[in-house]
Amino acid sequence: MPTREAKDAAVVPGVSPQVYSQTDFERIARLVHGKAGIVLSKSKKMLAYSRLAPLLRKHRCATFAEYLELVDAEPDLAAKTIAALTTNHTYFNREPHHFEHFDAVVREDLLAKARRGEKVRIWSAGSSSGEEIWTLMMVLLGADRTAGKSLLQHDIIALASDLAPHAIEAGAGGRYDTKALEAVPEALRRTWCRQSGKQTEIGEELRALVRFRQLNLLGDWPVRTKFDVIFCRNVMIYFDHPTKERLVSRLVDQLQPRGYLYIGHSERVSGDASAMVEPVGPTIYRRRV
Image 1 (cartoon, rainbow, N blue to C red):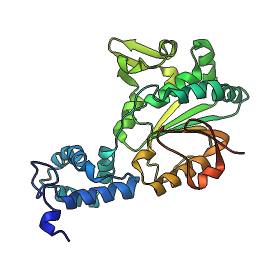
Image 2: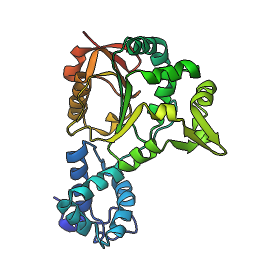
Image 3: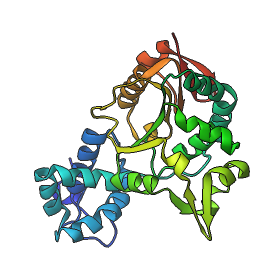
């Protein structure tokens, strides 16, 4: 049985265990798993230190133990702590086969539905800084500007949600390095974006269709509608297996009959949700009627 001294030996080279100990890391890991379902493995000790050290300085805490006492007492600070530990890595046109499938198989049905006066609802769950939802909406509107603008008259709304407020702010801001959009087909970029030097801004037509909201996928979902399409990609890789299965079941429950669920390349549908969907492409599922 390891002694307390061994347990609290330095977990980050050069950092005193009095400042950041194994006990502190374990408290952080329990917090993040309990609130957001994210599993912090032992290899993430340095990541936790580097992500949270600026918050310690901001709140004038000399040790992680002191900071974690504040976190326990202040729910808003707990949320900021979890947001700081989330990974918001994404890029435009990521996993392009999903957008190709959406364009070839799903898009026309959604446009026909909109033209009949019915609601069209799309959800980017775990939207990070917005690259996914903006790519998807460009594909939905298409390269013909006149035809795309006519869709603004119809009831089309996309929800983009993420746990991290800084990610939501970046996505809603809609400004990116021009080079970041090079993976998007040129015709779509030219039609729906405005370039100004090294910066490119998402056009107002796309902005009119998207609502950015902070949302914890493990918490309550204040949504009153079913979705035609849900993208939840490369989010579940941070969860343990039971959490993944619960989340997938909830996502499938939120789909319209014959609605589509797109997940990350290393993720799979399993558990109760398996009986509710059918695979229709690589990491693409359609809800059964």
